[in-house]
Length: 264
Image: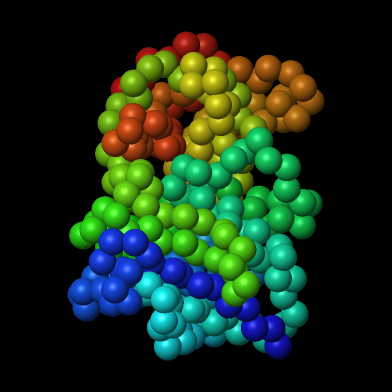
């Protein structure tokens, strides 16, 4: 049996008094429970679960808040052995990716990549709602900062007024034509990654599992071409989920073509 702990440390602003308004604290604690369950279940089972809150294969507890600003400590128990380093790295990836702070240029271990692959694109979306709840005290007092850390203080993620804003996107028609190539794709979930030539970066995308066989075959063709070092150029018609900063978070794809295709 393994035991791992996560510290959620609210500080600055009203949190420096060692207390939070009771409703804000309750919403934040619910968010902590949901986010911890979602990411633990994804790590242990290689799937993203959004409706059922309990993580299969683990029990999660909350310890008495600690002194010093306002600190919650979540305790995660699993029946089997757990590689703590990879698990904490997975939490760092999931939380920072959900708020647009994950550095994709960083190299990560094959063990971590193996855990990320089945949840690619989908996990950050599943974390948006619980993370918005975690930000509740920050919504009320923009000076408050939340640090998520390992028990000895190693920082995994930092949430603040800027990350709160990133969690409040809108869905609009894509602001420009979308062309590029697929870099990752999970045919079981319809989620993947697409290198956008205009954005000059990789953007998550989702496509309905009920899309035509032709559409899905073009996605896998582009991925295959990319893996061989060839262009695999595709044009997408999609809606864009955009943060208030204007940054595109992901595409909801409803059309794929080998030739230019205007967004609907």
